[in-house]
Length: 201
Image (spheres, rainbow, N blue to C red):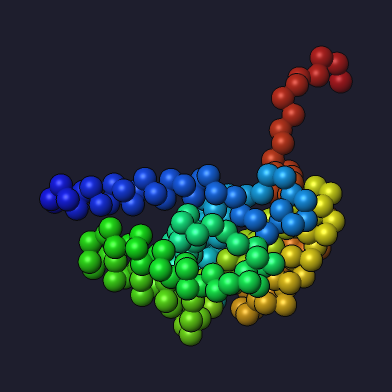
């Protein structure tokens, strides 16, 4: 592999490191001080996408890959909450940024990622529909966790996602999760093991 190609790929790697540094802005409107980063969102959303795709009979690898790369453009244009995006077309800016980002990658890979991004945006395939549901569902889970931490208005984000979801699996999962009294801590319930040894019975 030529040094010129290695240089371009390494710059792409350097850029995506910023996913860890850029915070998602939506829940800041509700007063959340330390919202999740793009990396936080993409990690959980990609795994949700894989599982939803399996449940819906879609291609899990393709679906998860769409979600894995879907927010890369926000490294350059920022994450815009819904109030800000009322005033300009963020979609055009994200498309331009993404195309410039993948321009650093080998042609075949660049073409594949650009095609996946377009498919994700158009939502004409089952994989793209599931991918968007995964994106939204992750947002709802973050909002549910914030609500449980005392940010009551975060419930609005959950309600908005409920209206937007398309797939049966995502709808059923969100319905179940909404009923959880303590979703944030539900995963470790029953896993605690007492380590003390009683001296007397």
